[in-house]
Image (tube, rainbow, N blue to C red; front, side):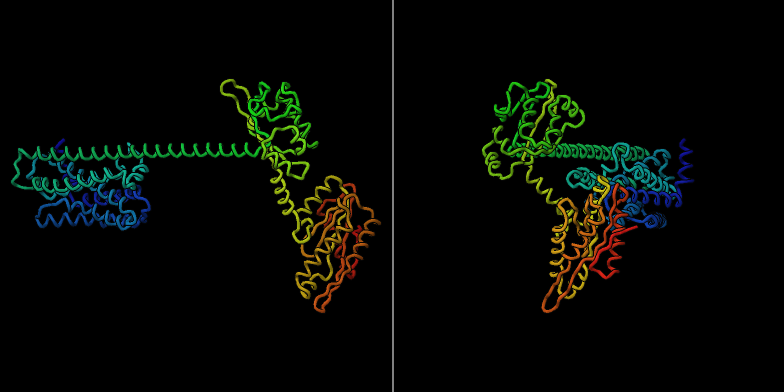
Length: 577
């Protein structure tokens, strides 16, 4: 076995080629390890390969120079690979000095430990220090050292016991990696001094053969123990870091839960404070659990049960159009289905303000608010949350009914502003198209008027845009005066207006209406001695019994409008096949 090992050392490890190859691999995996453990480190693949070649040549030349000079081989010559590689890494990681320092001493300690194990292993197995104090012996020690270091770095230290991501997080945390840093620093210095002493003894001709085995065995054991201790510290610190992070995450989850509970509590208190009604009902037992005294005896007999009370309240206070929608909640099966599919529900209904004041015992501020309103009907939002009693399994319904009149009004104002032309107050193009399509789908008959204001561009150019805006507003007023409330009036843009008259398709009626518009559309605008006459050009198309859709009806009215303009303006044309 010893002969085989000696042959391996002499023929393979004991030459410059092995030293170059091992130096290349050690430096390559040193870069690889740094890239995994240090954030923001970037280097191109060709740059890394070139750096590895240069570092390997550096280690080889340093060793050869020492051998030729017959000088004592120092571990510092071997550490050229590490020092050169780490110098390059520092240039790439100088914005992260703490992580770089941690990485440097982590790699340095592991490298020196492998050096001690390699030196002791070769010396003990060959057991002849006088022959080993040769060039092959020196090449073999350093080649084996760098092969071992390359293997260690390639494994990403102790990767079997912890993840590289956790190690990277630890190495960037100054406080939590301090123990690892101090151990690596002090142990690296101690082993570097020890390596110089031990190698001097190894190659010193005056060493006694009977102590050689003890010296190298001692160095091997210390090196192995240092590697093991380093691994143990890393593992412990990583696990502590993991537990610390879990603790932080748990604390954050608790804080989030507490925040959500406080927000929910504040929301419920706010809702209850502004609620017209706020109570809890046991649906299974059909009785009021909390807030039952809010309903006055004038509304119903308390002994009838919760569902009957709600029926009476809806029947007496809710708007006729909303009763049919909400009356279903008087059924117990309704709550069973909701409990399974949708335990939370919100709906709106209109309530008679005066009747609400009659049958409910409201807080003084809520009562004063309702009494101060001028409207007979208010919008109320019903928020119902169903749950099961933990002890009995009964279905519980938490109900809050709040005044939503202002919200409904705001939503209506937004809807109107989104569908209305801001200058004239008529429907805009999108709303007009939508409404006409719906009317045609429902009735299938009516007439479409397209109206252009003649000479409108001259008003803007000669009299100014304020006068042009006034002309558009006056046109809108004329259209309102000449059409019915159920007719759709809109401004399509610029000086183009559109009117849809449902159930009006008699040609005589359309001609009379268009003729009246032509008479009303003749106006004169003046400013600073300049005057402009305006009139209407009108195109009309009609349909009956669902024979047209919006697109074809608009196309026909547009053709008729074009014919009216060609005829000299201030006139109308009705589309005929």
